[in-house]
Amino acid sequence: MAIDVYLNFNGNCREAVEYYAEVFGTEKPQIMTFGETPADPSYPLPEEAKNLVMHARINVQGSTIMFSDVFPGMPFVAGNNISLTVGSKNIDEVKSLFHKLKVGGKVGMELQETFWSKCYGNLEDKFGIHWQFNYDNGESVM
Image (cartoon, rainbow, N blue to C red; front, top):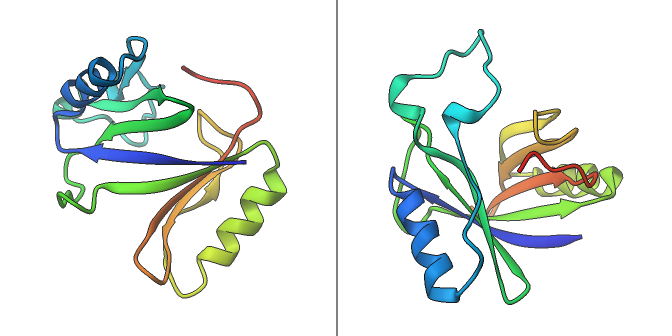
């Protein structure tokens, strides 16, 4: 299991991730935009979201830092744009930690299958800390 950092940006994520990759001397980051994700006819993608970064990551001396732009219409507050991400190859561990940390908190997305994971969810715990949970079965969409 790993706990990684996830940073959100308000439309300038590409600039930020490329900047941090240069500063820390990492490989050029792979960047997936919202427009490159699988289409869902139930939720058409707004034009202004297509070029925004859905996901990018860099590795800085063994620590994974992940990046994303906030989706249009979602709140963005500088200083609160960070969450901790639990990634585990053990789906029972993901479920157990999610259910423990949601007590007294607010669930943003219940654990569910997504195009990148068989089990993903996010929440804000009772102390106001934002968490993401991701089952990592070894298959990567990026």
